[in-house]
Length: 78
Image 1 (tube, helix red, strand yellow):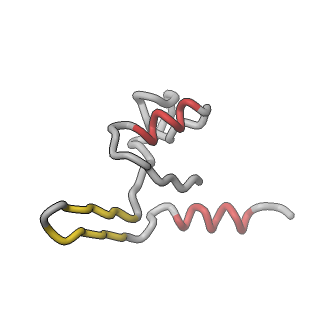
Image 2 (cartoon, one colour):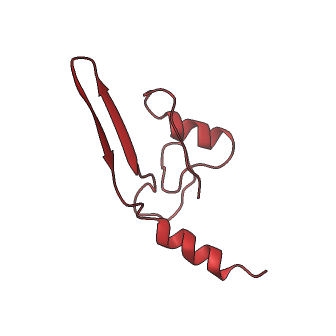
């Protein structure tokens, strides 16, 4: 589980950088490995959209992968 914060709005920025360091996003068939994921596991939990002539728009949602992280943390042997 990795939290990413893009600096620019360039297309594929997060996908390319993750693949470059050897950790492609699961399900990314363009830059990643050939895995069995039915879709790309990339989710935006928060978006902030600034508009030059209108008020900005901020959207936030529940992280759909949070339950997987909690399960992984509790199943680790200490």
